[in-house]
Amino acid sequence: MAPFDGPLLLPARRAAHAGDEVVLAPAPGSTRPDVVPDGTRRLLVSWLGLAVGSLVVAGLFAGLAAFARTPAVYRLFSASTFHLALVAHVTFAFTVWFVAFAGALWVYVAWRAGYALVARASWAALATAAAGAALMAVPAFAGSGRPYLSDYVPSIDHPAFWGGLALVAAGVSVQAGVYLVAWGRARRTVTPTRAETPEALGMAVGALAMLLATAIFVVALLRMAPETPFGYRLRVLFWGPGHLLQFLHVAGMTAVWLVAAAVAVGAAPAARRTLGWLVGGLVPFMVLTAGVYVWWRPEALLTNHLVTLFTFWGLGAGAVPVGLILVAAWRRHTAGAATARLPWASPLFSGTVLSMTLFAVGGLLGVVGFNQDTRVPAHYHGMVGAVTLAYMGLAPSLLDLCGRRVWSDRLARWQPYLYGLGLVGLMAGMHWAGGHGAPRKTFGFGWANTQALIAMNVMGLGSLLAILGGLAFVVNVGWPLVRRPGGHAR
Image (cartoon, rainbow, N blue to C red):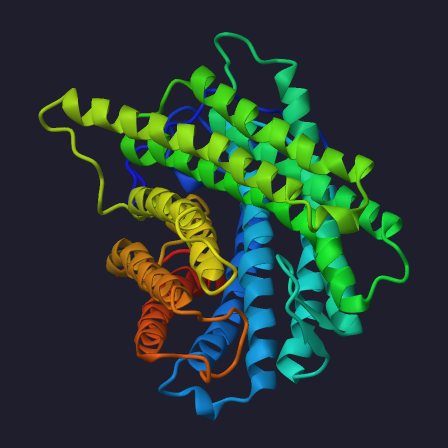
């Protein structure tokens, strides 16, 4: 039995060795890590290590950025330090962390579904992405280059940053393509007795979103007017790809929700109905978001709100019904037996529930009183926090599957609550301050009244709790990744 989640409910399908392919063949009902082939285990641990490592970098700069906006201590920092820290934090927390964990999810979900991934291509994808992440960090730690606070992918104008970003995008795109190929092969053999798992389709949708994001970046680069100023050019380039990456993140988040339903609760919803919502809710809006780049110039799409509307409604249409279906399944599960209880001590389950909550609250904040001030980061911290909590909740189970254990079982149980509470405080403070005119991406407090100052200190306290929650996750999951497998958790 896995340490937190009860029996793994795995499909009884088995893939065969095929030379250059990783065998992803879970034994029926098995919970032992030795059923995972060595190549798959190493690949999964490596993608997870890249994801956690990027979160370490993001956390270091998150502390600088948050405290530089906290009235009690902001004079200890310069405006230049604040902007570089903000760019580094957002890039590693909202880009590298998410796409690297998506790499781990493609490997894990493929193993659960019995797909065979091409090993050489997968390892090449990982190596490329890891090299890119290392290059991206160079100007941030060196304090060199000019930061640009462009939407979705803030950037540092430095050759190492641009080269690193290109390598990360290329590496993750290759892994997405490898997964799609394996998924497509497997679909030819799906039968009524060998049905597709809903999380497998969810990650196929995410892989398509990743490839569309990369393609649209190229389209925008080729179609943009050459005289466009550099700062505005960055906003135009990242607008479409940034929105399409949100479909990847939400697809990955819902895949974790579905895994939690099967593994932690043992009450997964009907696959066919869930699959319909995933495909019908996400894919048409993804295609529309990418398709408008064929008809409109990329500069126009930055101002006509088509991309924003397609993304906002598409994410809700895909994730909200899946969440409601899961909640209904869990209610039936607990009502069906007097002894049935929801596993609140499981980080996979608690991370999923908190993820659903933050996704709902973040979506609501994107509608209620929304304006171009700190209410914008209040909204998107809820959305990206929802994805982060889902991934954090799954990570201990991935470690256990690979023959490793978290540093502390107790810390694993409490960490999602600490991180989630911190995000709630951060969101509340930012939304409150935005109602009193708090500007985005601005250093200093010459604009602030008393209520805004109180609200921003609430934001600072929430940031501190979230940072502690993130630090707890990094220590608890990161330490087992750098030590030898084995040992016992506390």
